[in-house]
Image (cartoon, rainbow, N blue to C red; front, top):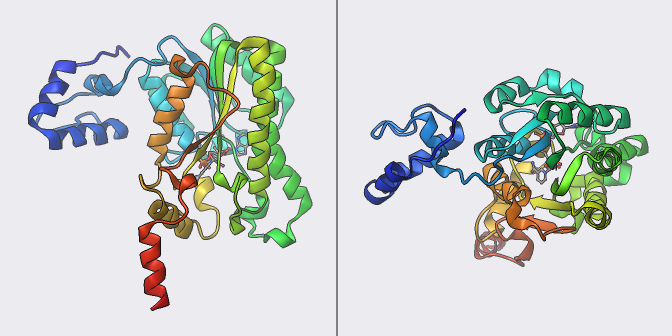
Length: 321
Ligand code: NAI
């Protein structure tokens, strides 16, 4: 689809109708045809919010299961910013998911791959490069799964087969995605690889069980592979440590609503949403962050730096009374 920015109309609205600007932003996210009834903002004008940050860039986006998925929002933003990409997920998840809708909306090709299988990852890169017409500039790892969490096993009663599976799916797959790419020379000079993490890698969250170790390993892989891929091809590798987010993976953790609310009240900026996360990840895929690598970047409204907030103090005091 042809994209253009109807800047003057947008500026007019900002000037005279600040309330409508909120509508524009809201409907932009919802991808609705008419963003603002008063101003008849049409689909083309949605791109007033885009900056062309990924114009001409190619990529691979994993982990879009449904509209709530963080990867889904990242795919929509990448499309708005001018990227072309393939979408991938585990074949089983693809059958359950609604990924076809996203592929249609973004012009992407869907390529099934279990991220733990070298063979399927090799095929993912082969087919992606063929479809996109050259090496990719960005890769998103947005994959996490723990059978121990799904089955409600406590940390002191973990099933070790499942533990190993959690590590393979949620962390080792990140290494595999890069090793397969590097062997095939499938990522272009200066490319960017991003995986999504959670603060349980650094701090203890009782119900996050074996995923805490998976995230610690994921972040460690970003540092180690970031060194090697940086030296070899200037490829950046980072993890983004995201606020609790209401997705299928997120809400599967017991007590999720409580720690979502706790994090929200602890963070001076409130929890970062999946849309906020998409905005941030787009900057990491863009040329604006060429020298950022081997980092775990907190994207959490400030949560990771707060000891206690006034809201929580108030709640505790109420509880004590
Ligand atoms: P989601 O459930 O929408 O995404 C997880 C994805 O992993 C799904 O699309 C699933 O099909 C895919 N997956 C599972 N096993 C796979 C395999 N073997 N091969 C390929 N794909 C596989 O949930 P969400 O929240 O969007 O998760 C994305 C990432 O964000 C995960 O790494 C998660 O740990 C991380 N994250 C999520 C937070 C949250 O509160 N939702 C907070 C911080 C990080």
